[in-house]
Image (cartoon, rainbow, N blue to C red; front, side):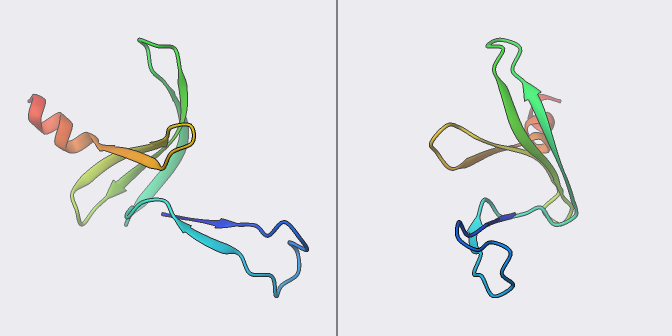
Length: 82
């Protein structure tokens, strides 16, 4: 998953260079942007929910303030509980 940073100056110029930032590796099949709220704290997070077909993972990724993206493999977590 990558994010392309829009240049501050002349962003609509087709020759402008957009800086690529790798957020995390995957997803390889599908993803969805959503907001999840943690019940115990009431804090809301913008998250990316992604399926990673070849890795057999269902992952939720989010960012903590002033840090890099973090993620948890829900399928692995679910399997360890069952």
